[in-house]
Amino acid sequence: MTAVLRVGIVRLCSKNTAPSLLNVQSALPAALNQKCSISGRTMRGGPRIPKCKPYPYKEKDYTVWNHFFDKTSKRLDENSKIILVEGPIGAGKSKLAAELAKELDMLYVPEANMDTYYINTYGYNMRKLDPQLPESCRSYDVVNFCKEPKHQNTASFQIQMYRLRFMQYVDALAHVLSTGQGVVLDRSCYSDFVFMEAMHKHGYLSAGARSVYNEIKENTITELMQPHLVIYLDCPVDVVKQRIKARNLDYEVNSKVFTDDYLKDMEFYYKQHFLKKMSIHAELLIYDWTSGGESEVVVEDIERINFGTFEIDRHNKKMKDWRIPLETEWCEARTKYTHDKPDLHQYFNIPRYDVPELLIDPEDCKVFDKVWFSAPGMKYRPGYNEDMGDTGLLTKVKVPYNQPY
Image (cartoon, rainbow, N blue to C red):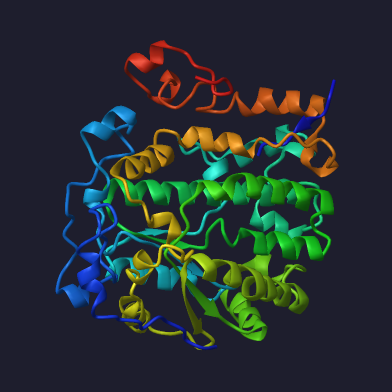
């Protein structure tokens, strides 16, 4: 039998107001004519009023047939944007992201974590199965990484984290295009490589695993429409360590991972690689968050950014993904991130059998399948499990969880 592959500082802001731009904007096609600047509740004098009723994309499918009856660009307005809040551990990203989302009437998306993978649709925690599983198939998340970073499951964990962040971003795109409401994300798939590079440099992840990660990323990241704005909260390493200590999470405080060198390497990859790459396609706001800051100041800076500038210069790479001239293309993008989301999962299937830490022994895999798909709610796909309370016609058609539809 062959081995089985695992599946798994300074404030900077744009203040280019260009009064004459508004007249040019009004002459653009409807699909392009998004207002130039994001506006908050204070500036508008109240909550955002949607231009059209949001489409319930989580309950109703959106296929090519829906293109004829439900257009996409009609829902988009000045706040139909994607904002990423990035920064080191303990910088205060979650708090700022939530406050921005509230003021800008956007959807707040917390940082992705392995609970999304290990807690199934019915609320059962699959980590409970660990005693029955071989070592290579047991659960592994950030807590395990902090305690035992040189574990054989570290590489598959980081690849899984990238997948979760990728799919979270796909959902963000689906939300914007289906409802018109903007999204604020706490970290994203675009910055995930910062962790991978730091892990590799410190010997927690092999060169082979790094090459698989990069191959997967190259195969998937280009399928996305890049964000409009990236906000980076800068904190020096000594402050990061103080905040880790103040959070008083046992697995972080006592971890051998968060050394000065490891945190400095993360800072390096963030500033010298991530921010430089993102500046090509998105607007940047960078803040010295050593002593924290006020979300009101950030909102004011966001409102000053003239996103419409990039609609005029057709050769500018910024906002290129969002310069869509035809309504059919807007609808196709929406279908891609809703109806065709399962197809995007397939881009993670990279047939690499040359990295031992990403392989599972066939016998271990047999045990995993037997135990994993015998857990509560895992015998059949969600909606088909009568023993978990599912009712209706779906329960009469038994579709095993580990089989395609």
